[in-house]
Image 1 (cartoon, rainbow over the protein chains, first blue to last red):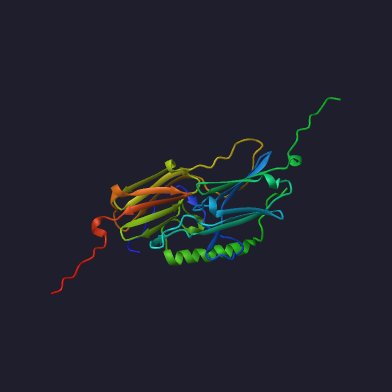
Image 2 (cartoon, rainbow over the protein chains, first blue to last red):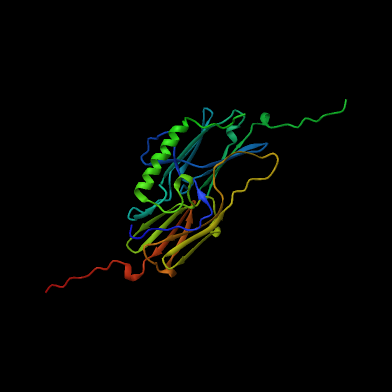
Length: 137
Length: 149
């Protein structure tokens, strides 16, 4: 490295990328993406950071009660570029979750935008909370 | 009720993995800035060199191109912006996991030499920012022809 690279005054920090728990059969690195999981009365919403992945590069599967995300990189440096300095490794992403029976598998929706995958997992009708009206005796 | 669980995750194996990766990273790149044990600077960047340019790549998932500001001054590139993650503030929303980072970021990266400031191009695709910083003409390799004597 010809000159040290310096960084200044960042207010924000990112988590170091973590390798996925299980090894895959594909060559290269596989990381465990950061996720947020929210629950509303009607659905679960899973948001996963998958920087560098395009629509064609992500598989979402629900099988035997396990929801898995498997993604390959679409944005890569050109082969001729010489690395000068590196802070992140590039590779695919993989993560899986046990999903409760209360999810309606037919209605799961997935959307990828700007490197963020959003999964919406609607709850089956019978598992939604119900308000019970209390009547006066 | 646990609706989501994480499979085959031995916490110690994850810790070992992280420690191995840290020593890899520190050993080969020795980045400056805050300790990696407390997280990395955001956004993480990689720098590449081609014959006529430097190319900076930054992982910035979930932003829009208009929310990222790139500026160049001499040999320094500054990336600025804010990553917003909105969680609806409603009583029926509960948060099970919050791993994605949000907030304001500002990073200055020093290049080996000053680029041609007017020819810098930035593109944002699929959560990755790519900034192409052309080298000044004097820095580009030149073929010298040899005349037979």
